[in-house]
Amino acid sequence: MTQTGIPYVFMRAGTSRGPFFNAADLPADRDTRAEVLISAVGAGHALNIDGIGGGAAVTTKVAMLSPSDDEWADIDYFFAQVAVTERLVDFKPTCGNILSGVGPAAIEMGLITPSGDTTEIKIRAVNTGARVIARIATPNGQWSYDGDTEIAGVPGASAAIALTFMGVVGSSTGAFLPTGNLRDTIEGIEVTCMDVAMPVVIARAADFGLTGYETVRELDDNRDVFARMETIRLQAGALMGMGDVTKSVTPKFAFLAPAQNGGTIAARYFMPWNTHPSMAVTGAQCIASCALTPGTVADGLLTRPKDSPAQVVLEHASGSIDVLVDYDTTDGFELNAAGLVRTARKLADGQVYVPASVWAGHGETK
Image (cartoon, rainbow, N blue to C red; front, side, top):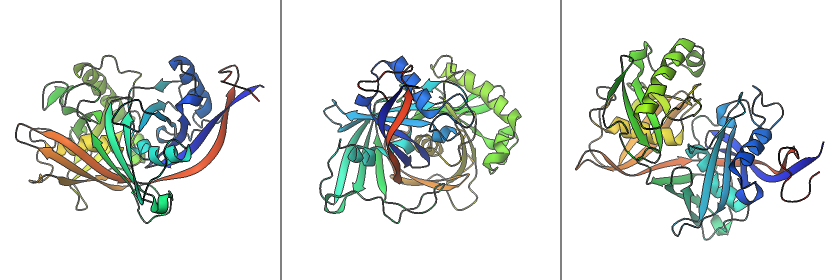
């Protein structure tokens, strides 16, 4: 079989994992590019046995990087969520966990040259238009993965990557509250439909007969809850102006409950057809914003911070995640920026191969 080799860097980024490509090494045509990613990941099989995916939605994510033509940004980050068991690619959402690997991957690819003891990289998230500043330690102009920062859902410690997200309100739908309401009732369940970094349909776990402290396995095994969630999600997608979201991973879904371990609020996040093993960076920003906004389904589940910026600690299935939210309540809730700390590590690099029948490539095949 003749194959096409494509250079890549394979990264664990936050609590997700996947290949990072230089966009110039991929086909420009969107449909052909989708087929290349499907083949590279091995989508269409539960184990992704014929590709480099890991058999879970958090391990079939792809980042495509390029120098930005935006006067503000250094790097353009284009994200793709490749399905696990279906031959599908969703280019609509973004991913904050994968974004945490953009800075290191850009350095690995030679797209960014470290400068000084701290390198600041301005990233434009192409899918949503969000602007993100990544600050990474580069002592003596050298990037290192060694560090003492730990994040829930990842074993061990690595170098800290500080992310500041700006321009994320309404990034997918154009509105903080896409339905125009703080709460909507769908199928008898109160939900808050909010778009901050990621459009999310947020409900109280108790309204689904749950505690909100269930494990990932307990939730994934409860297919009745998933069926009910999906019915609500599809209707919410239409109300949010997103059209038919049957084949789209957005909007996501989340459950809220009172915190158990000293955090601000407990949350479970869905991707949306299975449970996230920890918490998405983008989803965390939306859930934190919901928690801080009076009148949402979070009312009564927490004691809201009174000062800005506020540290919102979300307790999730693997631990917790801290979101530093800079906001203003002069005229409703207005998000200025959200900050999080993540880690990333290069796992492999080289070439990933796809059949030449999928794409003949820019040059020679092997």
